[in-house]
Image (cartoon, rainbow, N blue to C red; front, top):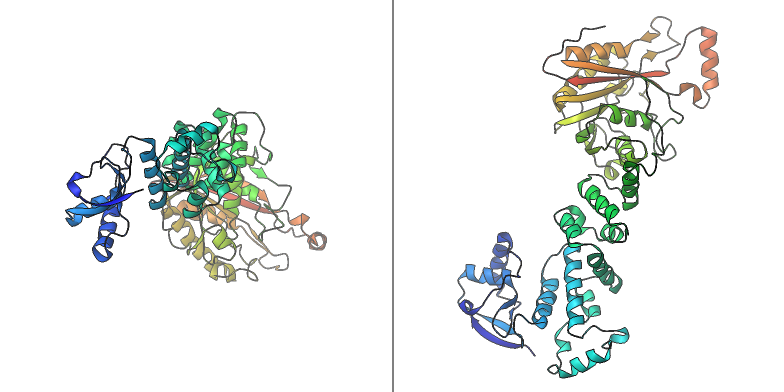
Length: 478
């Protein structure tokens, strides 16, 4: 049905419906043609309009070719058949996003229906009018195009996926598709399908806007929940935001059964809620198992009227698997400034002489408090240099208590860190006191009895020191 002809390149005509060619792709194709020749002929309509091969044509012009072998279709460029031919070629030759592919497939489906060539079950033309039309077409006309099954196979998708793609394009309005088009969401077919199934147009648009802007991998269901919380339709499930500077929580940490460590995730939630900007970059410089990422991802459960849309970065001196891969924890020594400038920084350093058995690094291992204090000065100064002006630095510190040491049972480390922060140019804007839940730990009864017998209390309270980076600090030490 298609004839092959040698056509002068100057005779090839272009219409306004072709995609804008990409310069880098033209150069890449030109290099390939120069090495191995033109493997796939251009496709032209009967009136010599280009149906497929714009990048190849531009590459040939770049190489200085005067003429080229083309496949000539037996129909003019304004016919539905020509549009169908161009769609098939583009679906086969171009790297399309899931959204673009969906739009091409829907247009193809509509053209087949217009031509009376849409197959029913078993590949038979689906109605009497279609059968009559097909009999009036040139011989083997339908054979010139891919069946839906063949096209699905050629572009590497199943028939079900083929149907799902068409459903996406049909259910999303052009305005909604344009909102998605230039975002990463455009190439996430599972999310696009789920969004297309949202019946309420207002909710669907809100979900598209929220998912196009977010930096975390929330599901459509979670985003819908965020939207409903914003609208006041439902309340946040976790009432963990504290109204005062005394924080005690009902559980020792976020998702306790799955992750190590004892810092409550609720501390991160409160520190984000009160001190993080709604837009910007937030980081944890000693991220451990990635608690910040998990708490931030679940923010729709606790953030109430705030709309946090932060870029999260995690660092640790010794990133541990599987969390390093799962939560993108980068290796970094926090005695040095972070490789990026951030707006909010959280540090939960190893506690003095309490982490020697299970953490690595000199800060965790040292038994000398002067050395510990010296390293912490470097950490605080590095934190300052990692922040943009006005940025917030949250430092979680616990006093050192050793009821077995009669000579030196207590060191007020938070007061020391407060002083180091001021000396480093920070302004202290808040202090919160956080119960570590020591008396609720397993076998805490023995510790309780010992403390009472020796009349020496053990430390149960961390302090969260909240600093702000300023050019000058007029805060005086306590």
